[in-house]
Length: 71
Image (cartoon, rainbow, N blue to C red; front, side, top):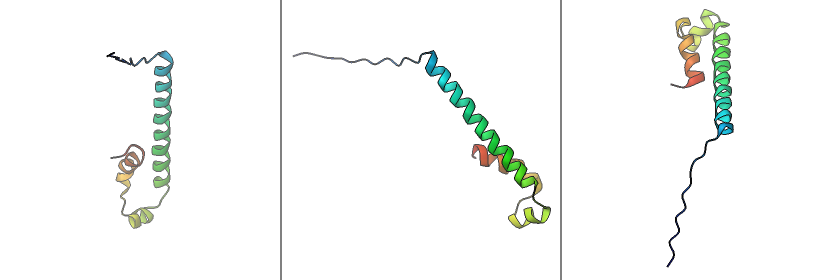
C-alpha cells in the first residue's frame, strides 16, 4: 500500500505582493472618492434640506465616513 502526501506551499512572490499593494491602493482611493463626494453633496444642501433629512451639519463627516468605510 502506497502513501502519498501532497504539501502545498504558499508562494507569494514579488508580483503577488505588488498586485496586492496596487489593489489596496485602488480600494483606498475609491473609498476616499466616495467620502469626498458624500461630503461635497451634503455640504451643498441647505440647512432646511438637511433638517428635512434629519441630518445636522456637524454630522456630515461622520455620515460620509460611514458611507465610505462602513460602521
